[in-house]
Image 1 (cartoon, helix red, strand yellow):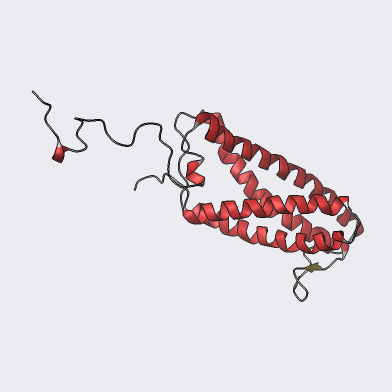
Image 2: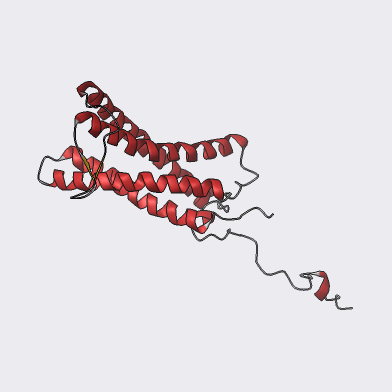
Length: 202
């Protein structure tokens, strides 16, 4: 079976959908901790459903990643860079799951209901405990910093492939077609296959 040259369309759809949701979530989180106005409650009501959506989509995305093999990295990439690229992907997946879970557990420990709407709320996943709430709150904040830095690194790597190396990595997650610097059509008097070979002029 031929190796895929691009990520599966479902993987690409999930990637860009989640990218928008995660960036929105980070900005909403920053807004929540920097305002005490009436907007705080509105941002809080937005933050929780976004986190739940990211958690569910992350589970689906991991399943898609395991089901559909991703394209191989360029063979001329150093082994260390290939290792970092693969490891950073799984770190991102882990953070996509860890952030909502820590937030959920934090609210449970604080005795706060995790509302996803006016009538739907999630059950607690941690016992009500003030010390645990304080610890999880700090963990939620520092994991958010790590998440933000990992996303910046991921974006930097994407730009490195798109603008400097100009290889097939970035197109494999965007349009799905590999980028080629070489002309797509064969030069004149060069046979495209054995069946229509044209003899050179005498």
